Image (cartoon, rainbow, N blue to C red; front, side, top):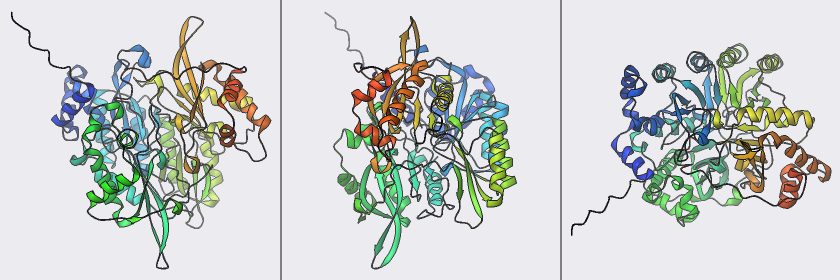
Length: 574
């Protein structure tokens, strides 16, 4: 009797990704894309559309139906592409902004988005457009390299670095140096997954160090009677389907060792083979969440990698910001006498190419040609003479970029959603704009900071886990039709009270969300104690009460949906 040989085990998604990454460094293969552009869209190899393009900040664009229009946890791709442009520390010149605006007009149907990592994202790019855009960006000192992929992502920093009179140190040179050293560095083209770094000397921690893979926050200590400014190190923050607040590593990082320390952490991450076995659990946070690492054991590994000891740094030395605005929106006096920054709130981060060009012109007219993108999807014009700020505000308002806005507008964040993303379940940006308008009409004069974050699926690209009210996209049946819906989470925070938002077990069709939030916030306004903010109210109020306020009646909780099959494995999340 003959026996058939056993079938070879099927290659997992993680194994396929690891095999392809070992086969090629995409940063060294852009000429292949130029050849694809010459031969046409059908010539593009599947390993490029599925993986390698991401190293160049590029994803294939969805067809508008999101994940429900496809199979195996991913929607259908069109012939168009999305490109994310890296902006270390969010720093832009007027010349660069003008070029991005012109590219947006010519190649991206006049549509651009500021992202939650200080990038600018374009859509509707054709294959030949990708090549033209990369060439034009290179000519002005910009690049999409590293904005996506299993690499060090755009390094974020305080948009007022070097300008804020309250900062401990200008950390922007360090943020830019880290980006230049680690992005497009062949040593780091093949990490287990994406790796996010934040560096700030800002006392309000406006870069959200709590949710980065590695974060440096400035700290001052006194040694032998002399003050020294260095950094506190945090490792393992992240959101996605399983949020985790970064672990504080008990070591003082001197300024002249900061780049070396960050590089060592990336090397430790790169070497963890167990993180390469499953792409949904391939972030450095899982060393703490699943593999038994602690801040102390991580410090030991770090010091072994460095070859020297770091000074201890007790948690009591930190000055952690509490419930404060961190977006730098409005007019802020700079440390430079007679100068201010003017921060405009860009609803959902969406801009036209026309607006980008106009912003470049305003930066030249009123400032010295310097702009800053923020992780709040906003834009700042800096180095503006105090006497010119009022005129600049008027011009920004005329552009539809508001400086003095409602709490709802100011706190609104939205990911890409089904409009372009193949992993999204619900549409987000149009919905969030409508939601903000509804809440402004229903609750005029609402006097509390409120972070209102909308994400189109479980991957939390819209960062709903750190929102006062976080909305996670779903689909439900209503009147026999499958419609967009949102699952509610509340009470997320960063800083002194850092914690992920808690799911309330309430889900409702998108059209009913304004009613639910109106009931919830009116419930808060009716019973709040003197000086009680929204976070404290959510903290002291049980889930059943909050769920009843949302629904208008006492109801049983519903389970939060599990992620779609495959979700998270190649999530484009910032």
